[in-house]
Length: 441
Ligand code: EPU
Image (cartoon, helix red, strand yellow):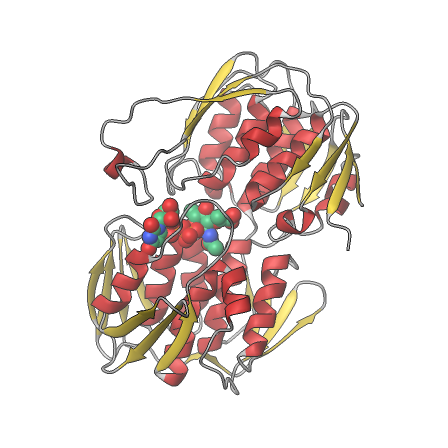
């Protein structure tokens, strides 16, 4: 099967992009659907590889899942029969560990493998496992098989405080909270808007969840049952990919639908860089080139900061800036897999050390003293990009590489299309609609 793109770059991209549903909401709502009774109808679910793999996984557990129309997914888990997540699926889909919640809900015991996912650092789930144990769930790990065995002896209850916030961890413990007969409090939670969308989905089906600043309180909830189809929010990460590409290619692209609040910081930083940004409707923005791009340094952090998922796209815009810019990644280790690949196009990017004072606190991953990290890059903008053969090794880096190829002269081959397509729906079609020359080979 073809798994590469052939891209002929150098054209300004122009036109309109209709955003797909958010990957990081779709995956969670599908998993949470296994805690509902009767049919669950989810709308705006992107047909991306991660979603398709997850659907295969939940089917292997006995759930029914079927797309009606392009993006409407109907799930029914009334006949769930299997409490063991297959290793093959589990190692492919990192969020599969969220299945602890529906499987414990249904069977009181389950077997879930240590998760896989994109290669953007060690990505352990220690804080999450500690959370399960603190809330009263018995968890054992078998290092020979790589499986966790979790068991509910008494209904979960109590309080857990994340030492450092975790996005999926917050969501999983919230789902665990739905099994309490009492109350569960989770403190120092992550605040990503994708979590709010999941809360909306659950509360509209009867869940008792209260979000108060950095805390979530879940009280005894009835059996979840959907009253009406749930439409998931748009993918703001997809917006950032196309918006930066629009400006970097000296083009002009309208993007929507999106709520302004979800991208407020991104809009501010785009304006700081001199990019053209115009709100043309309540939920639509136009991103356009209006003259030289200025270098702007960024540092990633959880919401409401500059998202880690946006930094590879930011690097692409900064390649076109007049001067030097710095990107400091605080959330994940190894999120710079695109750097060596971009160098093949003739870019000048160096890893630098900015001397962080208290790295254990500053970084959101589990910082180890004796390990070497490369968390900061310096980009020298303004160089002409030429063609090359590039290899994708993680999702967001993949999108950045494909975008860089669209800026480069000549024909570039980008290998690993299926990794990019884990998270981007109709990438080839959307780029073509903007006038970009791209095809699968
Ligand atoms: N971490 C631990 N231990 C834990 C949990 C997290 O060390 O128990 C570390 C992680 O390794 C990471 C940091 O803490 O270095 C933050 O991790 P978090 O749990 O917040 O991230 P996540 O839930 O694994 C989700 C998204 C990511 C997105 C981040 C930040 C999904 C499926 N993934 O990851 O999206 O970048 O939150 O918002 O929701 C992507 O879409 O490409 C992607 C990676």
